[in-house]
Structures are given as structure tokens and as C-alpha cells.
Length: 218
Image 1 (cartoon, rainbow, N blue to C red):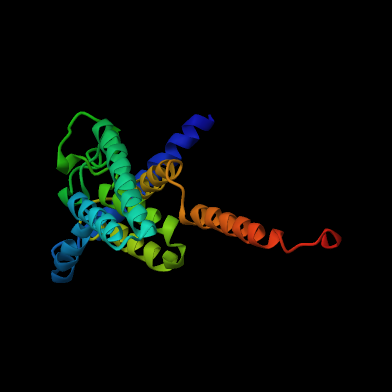
Image 2: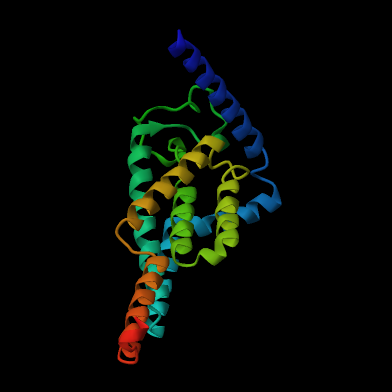
């Protein structure tokens, strides 16, 4: 009984998702949306990889370990997200909203067609943007607002361009979060590094002042 109810609920959610995706995709040929489509491509694989490598290179050239580590973290998180989304795309078929195909084609089905127009789920651009954004926040938490705003904008741009449905975007964001979290288990973040340096500084201060402490002072 509960399985049947759950199935009907999921079907309703998917129909609403398809409806929303089609409504957004109606704007795909608007001049403004055509310009925004170029902005959307900033979250594609080559630009994000280039940004990650450039960040690491600049950090290394400046002797800035934090910035260099950020670039490496960005690249690792993006590659992990790319691998994860690719694995899902191979297993799920879904026609992109801009095709305005039948409802069946726009439903999530077992993967049989590893073709771009039929690999709407999940959003790789959103996965990459989220992974890189979260990687930056690990090192520079003070830019939280700007980072999340950029990621949200990249995700939102997938809709009017007809590239993805809302559920595709949400799934991409989840993959990006998971990929970056996995990478974070390997790379220590800035807070950890600062804490470690702080412990060393305290130890040095104690060593310098230990000789000045008289027995009666202890």
C-alpha cells in the first residue's frame, strides 16, 4: 500500500518537474538567454579545470601554500564530481527539456543511450560548479556568500537554456557536495592548518619563556 502511494507521489513530482523544465525552456531562444548560455559554459569541464590549474600555479609562483592547495583541491573535487556524474549518466536516460519530446522520453529510465541529448540527468555543470565552489570555501570560508551565489546562478542557468530539468540540477548539486566532501577527507583544510600552526606557535612561546618561570611561580 505504502509502495503504491510512494510511487504515485514520485510520479507526480516527476510530472511537475517536466512541466517546470518545459516552461523554463520556452525562453531558450530569447536574446538574453542566448547570452546567458555563454555564461553557463563557464561551469563546463575545460574552464573549471583551467581555473583550478591557474589557481594552483599562481599560488605556487607566489609561495602561497593556501592558494596553491586551493587550486589542487578545486581540481581534485571537480574531477571527482565529473567521474561521479558520468557514472550516473551512463545508467540513466532522460531527454533534455529543449527537445520537448514525449513525457516518457523526459522520465528517468534505465540507461541505454549514452548520447548528450538524452543524458539530461544529472547536471554536470552544476556538479562541477558546486564541487569547485565548496573546495574554495574549505580554504576561504569568508567568501561563502559569493561562492554559493555563483553556484546557484550556474545551476539556475541550466533551466531557461533548456539543458536540464530542476531535478537534474538538484542531483548535480548533491553530486558536487559529495565529491568535494570525499576529497576533503584527504586534504586538510585551512582551519586545520591554522590550528596546527597555532599549536606550534604556542609551543615556541612556552619554550622561550620557560626559563624565566621561577619554581614559586608554578
